[in-house]
Length: 321
Image (tube, rainbow, N blue to C red; front, top):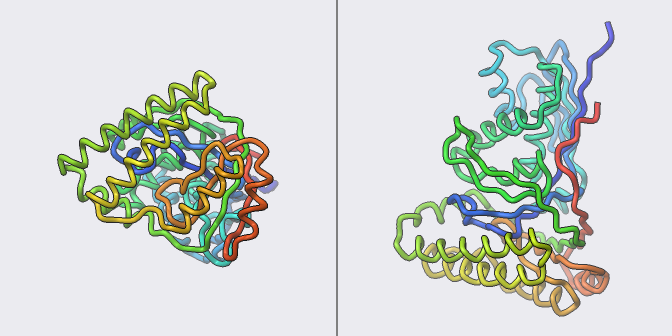
């Protein structure tokens, strides 16, 4: 009998508009990047999961089990699988996650791979819904799912769902077609814990007021990007980021950037980047956006403790076999 195999891959991401606010229903823009997680699956007589984090027999790690549980809900009994789930090396630098979204990309790639085996088809919309449920339950409701959506659809405008069952999210493709360079500074950042601190303050009147102003600036920025006016959009992104920093320090009492990341941002913009920021929840890296970023790479590369990664905008989920 011929072995039936499924192969899929999903991209990492950079969230540059909507950091934190996307968790509370705000609009965001996320860029899919060309660092991918690759999944290869076939039905087997025992469960065997080979991953970038180790080999698991019988039972997978938390991420794998969260995906398999969704298929158990859908199908009841499911077969055993031999899975290879391998990250591109840039997701882990010197033993630390680089912040490019390996977990969401792995969730989507694995979901797509198993969905293709069990259903016999390739349906990105269904893969997205299954992966979002797995991600939501694994994170215990913390987060927005923007990274999962980008891993399926590529660079997108995103607004999170209000109901897990309805999946009433908003997704619209939008590419920026610019170069990206990332400086990884080697610090771990606990995204879930940081977001949880924001959630604790969500009913505070000052929190609501500032978050509303952030949302307006982000909406203006995305509207300008859709019109091809990226450099004008950046000014609104910058205003929103400044307000977010004030919200984090004055209301939430957390730091989402530090002196080192701010220094890297200043260097990038001085060396020709249109914009530079610590993306997503922030803390472990800085991303520069622009054209001809060789001077940025050179300047960052001279700084001790910084790993420089060149990124390109990429498409979303790929069913490869």
